[in-house]
Length: 309
Image (cartoon, rainbow, N blue to C red; front, side):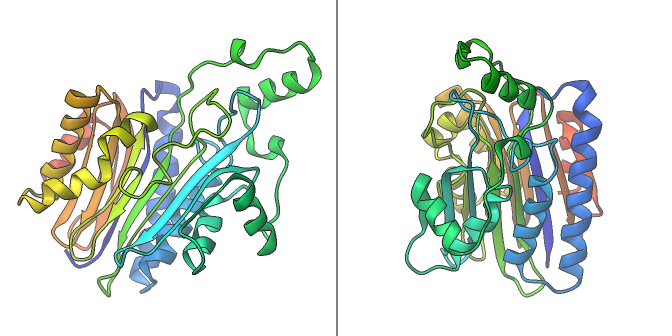
C-alpha cells in the first residue's frame, strides 16, 4: 500500500436510530481525508482536518457532542502524533470546540508533549484560541440536562446521568510521501469525575505510531484501554510477524480476556490496514490506493472488509 486513511467514530452499542448519522459522518470525513491525500497534503494536516470535521459533527463524542462530567462541565482530551515520535496531547480541557487543534499546537511547541487542565487553557489562550460556552458544545439531552443544572439549585448530577451512545473519533493517515500520522479526540465518558483522563491523550493507549510500521487509534472504555496499553499492544503483535488485521484482532482479544474491557482499534501502514472491536458496533471507514472507499458499522461489515485485506 502506498497511501491511505482509516477512520473510526467510536466503539459502542450504537442504537439503530443513530446508525445513519454515524455512517454519514464517517463518509464525509473519509471523503475529505482521501481528497486531501490525492492532493499530496501532509499526513498530519490531513489527520487534524479529518478529526476537526468529526469534532464539529454532534453525532460523535468529541468537540460538539461531548458528554458532561459529574459537575455538569465538558472536559475533553485529544492527541496527535507522527511516526517520528513527535506528539501533541491535551487532557481535561474545558470548553474548546476543537481540542485537536490545541493538541496540534502543542505538537508544534517544543516545551511540552502534553498539557492538562488549567495549563492547557492558558496555553490555548496565549495562542489566541477562543473558549466557547458549554451550551455551544452540547446537543439533545445533554443540553437539556445542562439547562436543568443551571436552573435547579437542588440538582444532584449523579442522579440524572445515564450512559449514552456517542463515541470517540480517530484517524490514521499514510500520505504519498510515506509519512504517517494519527489523531484522536474525545469528550470522555458520561458523568466522569472532574479531572478524569481516559486513554485518548496517552501515547500507547489511545494512539500509537512507529515509522515504517503502523499507526493505531483506539476507542472504548478508557480505563480498560489504559490497562491493556491497547494501541502499543497492536504494534507488539505486528512486531511478531502478524498482519495489521491479525494484530488488531489479537489486541482486542487481549483486552477481552485479560481486562474484560470493551473497545476497538484501527491501524494502518505500508503493509495494509486492520481493525477490530468487541462491541456490537463501531463506525469506521477506510480508503487506500488499493481499497475503494468502504464504510461500515458492525461485525458483518468488518468481515466483508477483511476479505479485501
